[in-house]
Length: 257
Image (cartoon, rainbow, N blue to C red):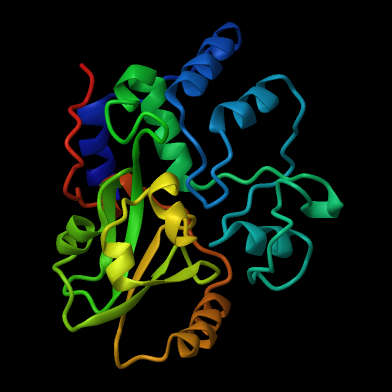
């Protein structure tokens, strides 16, 4: 783990630690960056950070789990399994009160905004949805794995970046196991972003792109997914950007200097 971290710091520098008087400037940069939570809800990270800096929130414990509603369930002493939504935790979570949840991917982007600023971050993605995102490509693809993609990347090169389909695809499960099944032909013309997937009633959410072959029964995938989540209720935090991410084809915008 130390070698990838060292390589990351050699490329980007150490994470700056702002002094108390500099926190407002950091909040401003994050708000200008347009960074939103990468866990599925898409809540503006700058707004969360502003609440923390203002002292509106206090953290008594930190828990890392695989999905936001599963995390809330775990904190409440229940099994760490996703619950039905709505409401999302930001609307009603622990103790029935709005609960902010952030994940390791969001914090990795936050650290880069702190280093390089809002303009640098907005050099990738679209004007409305800037930055990059981790996409978990699974199912009938040649190289299943976790990839880093620029928001706005069309699904066709996204799939090609995972080695392409290994057999004819009938549907994609988009966003997560609480996401949407989308006809493969319709999805292939869409971009990986909230705006791009909205016309097919889908969203990136938890970042899953599951290629479902024509021979599979989509509904049969859900119980298997639930068992997989139950088998690993609490996940270890890890360095996602440098260890787990592989650069995907870009949508054509050059990073800002």
